[in-house]
Amino acid sequence: MRQIKYGACDWGLPGGGLYGPRIAADAGLDAISLKIGLYENDYPITHEPMQKIYLEEQQRCGIEYCAVALNDFDNIPMHARKGTKEYEIVQNLIPRAVQTADALGVPIIQVPGFAASLIRSEEDLERSASVFRYLCDLAGEKGISVAGENVMSPDEFRELYERVGRGNFYLYFDSQNYYLNRGYRETDILEGLFPLMCNQLHVKDGNGAMSGALLGTGDSGFFDTMNWLAEHEYSGYILLENYYDQLPLRDEGDPYDLLKEDIRILKQQCNAGPGGQ
Image (tube, rainbow, N blue to C red; front, side, top):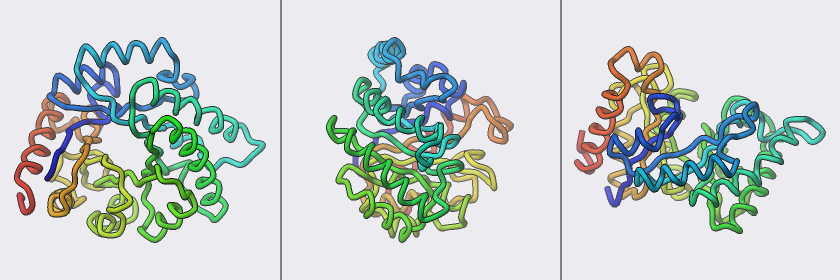
């Protein structure tokens, strides 16, 4: 592959994000994606004192913050209808997310489209596109990109992409979600949507369970995905999203050792190039 930066999602690291920058840096990673948190906790990293702590940790650890994930959209529908409490929460969170990304020097806001934010209807699609336009417009003023992570087919995502219609809107690819949730071959998604992807993606594996197996030991076709990316000269960030201290993966050993093993597998595969496995 071309230039690759290795990272992890803080919610998958041992401790679920506690001391995430330090853990990632100690493991030899270049970058980390940060979750914005939950409404119940008033989105912790949107507050200036917490941002100051994270910036101090960044300087101390030498780690890059490459993305902020709006993880609470799993619980609160981004396509909530006007007049609902959820709608007000979403509208309030969007500018706070942009401010947070700007304060922490984060280039991409990652927006998951699962669970509560899964698009199930035409109205969901149009409402989601509207929220993405709002987010993209605010983020664009700060030079920040927005990327949607979902399990939409290539045709479905292209429809969303066209409705959003913003130059800073992209797809955030994941190496297991499409297969696990919809039975799609991950390489088919890459074939259909590679030009619309941002320069970051998640890798994880599992056997019928999300983020539940070391890379290449599950059923998601990890090595096929990595070979495809190498053949097409992918360049950018590759972020681990396995859940190292959660079941079933933690049954395989110490979470910190499992993290190190995944890093070894990932780097070996990237350095091997096309056909490396």
